[in-house]
Length: 334
Image 1: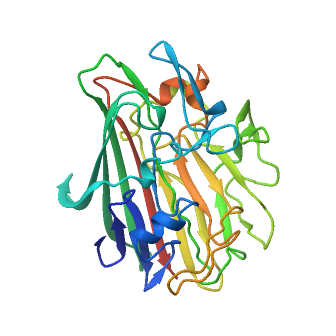
Image 2: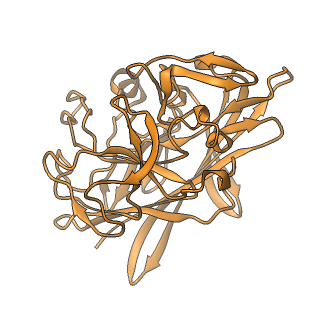
């Protein structure tokens, strides 16, 4: 485990284990790597790859001039990199390094050709950069994540597919459920999906969500697990988004705890999930975590982009290219 004053991380999945605001941990977690290995079906804090979200029919239809069969671990589809995605692999690290003149924590992983059915050997780096800022007299705690991936090796595989994110579940209530949390999303455009969570094509307005207008999470509703679109021009999304400005995707607060969270990213989309399927037993002093005990904001590329010709460019990584993206979490109590 690596820790700073406000954060702790694990080599397993380069997991974010703790995110503290004035001594309050706002992410769902487990106290040890062994417990993550036993109980982390919800992907608490994991680095997701090779591909975040779902791939239709657990199959890549056309890459390197062929198709690739993946693990069907979510109904008929492949989810979050397969049965043992990157969030369940051991990374090298943590290494304390300086990047862009700032101290940060580096985790690295090499994903071999054929892992979970994906082609090509991929070298992956994850940098976590903690920080603080003063804004309007309030100290805010920041965690920036930078992802990089590169297709390596001397085989004849010319392209693979990458789409990374972090899968932290946040809870600002200090309680067992997220009800009462106030949510503001910057967009209401989303990918319409079928019953298995695969987009059917259209990008429409999400019912009941108004951009930049807050709504409150209740005991049951709204029940959301959908991909919201920031950039509606898929052809303009590069494989490396790190040179794009960080854009705020969503903000959250709880009126009783006074805890706030903002999520920003360079990515064109984000999955917002209100935690319907969380089901974790009580372990080592932590209470059972059930449905709606945390929410996720997963900055990402479009869902199933690899199987949609006009979206493929945002996820297909070729030799001599680099995949990249950034996420920033900012949290405070006020």
